[in-house]
Image 1 (cartoon, rainbow, N blue to C red):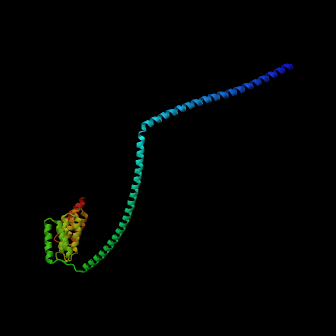
Image 2: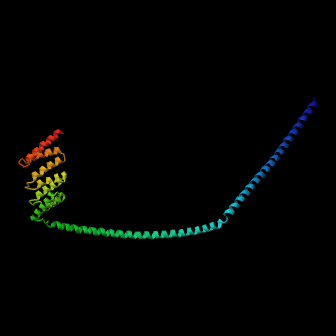
Length: 277
């Protein structure tokens, strides 16, 4: 029984020893196999890289052969461009210098301009002062009025312009007469005919304004004429309410006027038109 047990132990140790040796041998073998495979792969990669370098070299040689003749001209162009850049730099420097010179001249001209402007301002102020003194002297002088004979002559000329339908010339003449001598016996008539000029031109607002001025002339006999035309101007402007009120006021101010009957009829017409509306 004891001997059998000893034999079993021996066999186990032998087996265990041989297994360890086997494993060790396997590891060593695997290592060398791996190294061999790795070396093989490295050699393949090296060959691939060498082949790629050869292809690139061939490509470079080809490019050189194709473009080699251009290299001298490229060098020449580069040299010329370098010179051109130097010339441009020199030109830029010249331009900058000229600009600086122009700026200096501009500043000088601006100073001269300011000086001239100040001189002109001084001269203008002096002229205005002298002109003001002259105007004051002129105002002190009595205004020269045209003579009554010339006034009547110009009045008739302006009236003739009116009759000929030349209303602008007529208005201009009557206005000059009124402004020149408002105390002339024909001044109120001139003012009235000035209103008639605007009435004939159908400028009724202006006509009313000029007719209103007639009553400011003392002793005039054209005031009822002017008031009649004011009412008719309102009718022409289709302002019937204003026309009615004006004519009613006319009848109270001028009950004995030669136009009383006409104005009464106009009032009735205005009332009828207002009623119909």
